[in-house]
Length: 128
Image: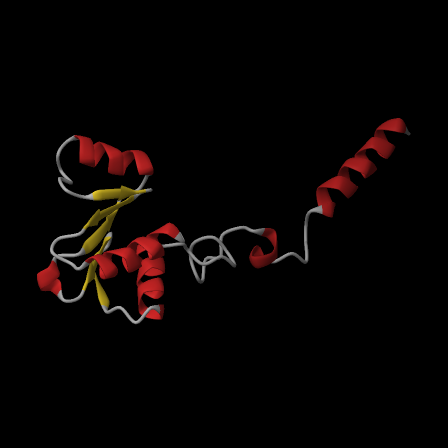
């Protein structure tokens, strides 16, 4: 009798998880259709910087996956993002980012851009 009761309780617990009304969007699991974390947009520092610059009416383009170049390109004002703050610091320490200003995980290369334009880019980087 006791074994039958334990088997019934085990069956109830085993079936309790089946047919859950929670979808991947509600459970925080992976959404195979959209990819990535379900229900959450992926954060991209270059995209966030571009949006901020555009809001200030500053023309900029994405030069590659981790770099944003501010127009005109002749000013050589650009921002390169590293994966981590420490990675950006290491790049600077190894001499791979000579003359760059370090702001978090961003390396700001000022080139020959005017100071007001540099200040606008710095303010966008400070908002991240």
